[in-house]
Length: 117
Image 1: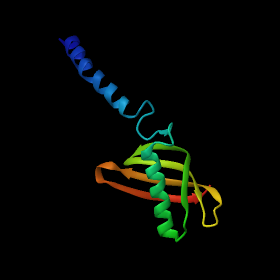
Image 2: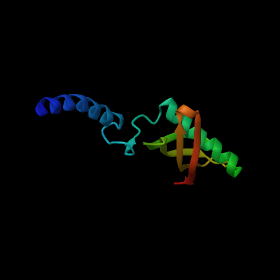
Image 3: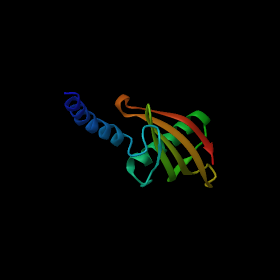
């Protein structure tokens, strides 16, 4: 009887463990993953949001050029760590590092930091 119970329990728990592992994409919850396609429209939209928010807060006039590289991390939402190329007011292109947390279910984004790289 005990052996039968263990078999049933393992049949229930094994699929659940697989599902939970799959949610983390192999690295688990909170692990950073490189962004493979930095030209993805969703990634570009996050980068443009970061520049727009920075411009509002700093009164600068940076213009988006491209996403150079980045990582994502599942936290309480998706955390984007991006290196973004942008033109300053004089037309000079510089790299900036931005951290944005997106909570899709709340339809919200927050610029956590924005600095020259």
